[in-house]
Amino acid sequence: MKITKRFNRVIKPLKPINTSTSDSKPHTIKPKPNLNPKSKTKPRTLKQSNLYPKPTFILEKAPILGPDFYQIDALDLAPRLLGKYLKRDDVVLQITEVEAYRSNDSACHGRVGVTPRTAPLFGPGGHAYVYLCYGMHNMLNVVADKQGIGSAVLIRSCAPVTGLETIKQRRGQDTEKPVLLTGPGKVGQALGITTDWSNQPLFTPGGLELLDGPEVTEIVVGPRVGIDYALPEHVAALWRFAIAGSPWISAPKNTLSPP
Image (cartoon, rainbow, N blue to C red; front, side, top):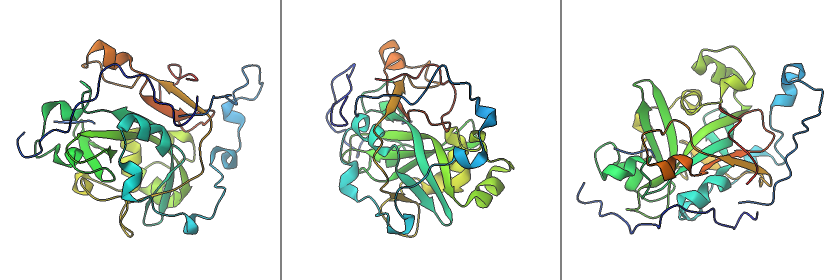
């Protein structure tokens, strides 16, 4: 499946919502997964150095993605964010797992319209939408599409590239295993962000930046996590995307498969 091919939608897109009037959560090349079911190698025998991504370019030269990159449907933006880099101070993370949340999606915070909490979600693509989950987890979303649409991509998991000691300190966990960053709350904690970062542009140098990264050619997809409250068709929608073969993917993994 080519990156430019759109995934099947369960509903038609809505027109932009008027932000002046009205809470929100918010390709692929045909995959040939690198998973060998007959392999005798067990995850616990991997050396720590093998758990980390190996950038194919120098991070200092990685360009910040401009505003135009985000002006597309969340369902198209989601897989394109895989492999890209999030940078804040000395911490750089590579995005390994995401979920798309669209404007006409009963699992998206945008379903309730514009509120003080969801206002950033209805802003222009390329900004952060950070909300608090269970009163303790800061969840980072990348706003997609044009102003007024109300859609975003949740960053579910990442792999550490630089700033490992800072990540450990912020997470309060002395480990180099995937448990360090496999979960959206863990990503927010590793980056040291709070809801104060909501509505911050991701293309402005010096803050929370989203950098270009290597193209991901093999992915797996599956239903999103923890949205049992949504309509059945949205619960079943395969709008969760991850890098195939990466250990830096949150649970459950058994619901993910090649598209």
